[in-house]
Image (cartoon, rainbow, N blue to C red; front, side, top):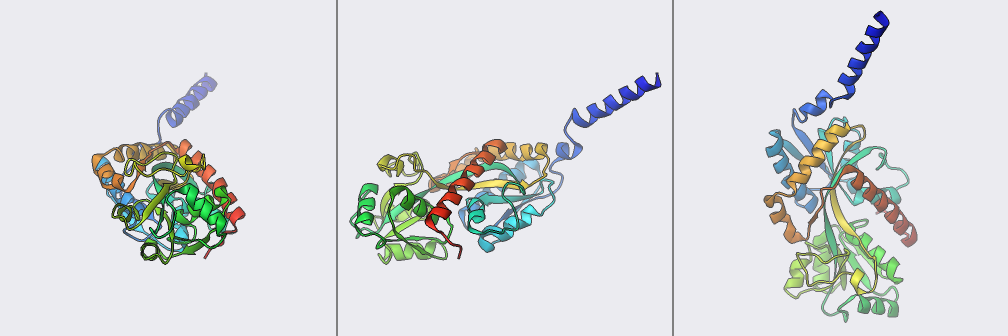
Length: 324
């Protein structure tokens, strides 16, 4: 009788433990949540985090604080989150740099897979290839032909080593079988100024930066780097449709959490973010910059990140990219 009672007691405890979410997940969030942006203020990563943070604050009735921690090619802010308590109260505004750094540095203070839960991909933004009007090219075919005729003589600008523009340029070179010389800048402003002046003939960068200059005719759009055209600029064709089938890359913006974050809490964050990016306030402010909103599951985002890690490891190795 006592043995039977003991078994029933253990079963009841097991049901209590595993039959419903942990109390911490049920109560989440019960205090302010911090989103660490590993860049300075003002960029698209920062603005997207703040827009989403405002919606989460309203939904949770808890303040969501955006904290900028730039430096180290995003490594400072990324390591801070990797070492944070895995309780859902410190999140990372992750991005493409987190899948490139492992290929550039033999030793990092974090591992992108082991040390993080990849909660959800917020949005993707195409890279736009533009040229100064003096360059005699209007499409991908002409650009490839000119680069082959003048191997290594064409320069292309980007906002810096291992940025989305630089990586798109290197991927383009690899897929097209051409050589061009990369000219890195400390941000998009200097790169665009020199492209507008004709000092550098080609620029690869997030669509939001050069698009206004394309519309005024000061720069010529060559192609977008996504498989599909952007609703924000439907007249600009893609690299994929101009002779390099399957060519695809973009800059992307996600939310990640420290490894060990309870799945129920990660799921709560993902669900609420997916709602937040459907809100008109978020979409109206960022859609004009070419943002394609995603809001996928943790499993889908993790699979995407693993693909990105493999792709950029290959590109870095093949093209011999070195960190600054």
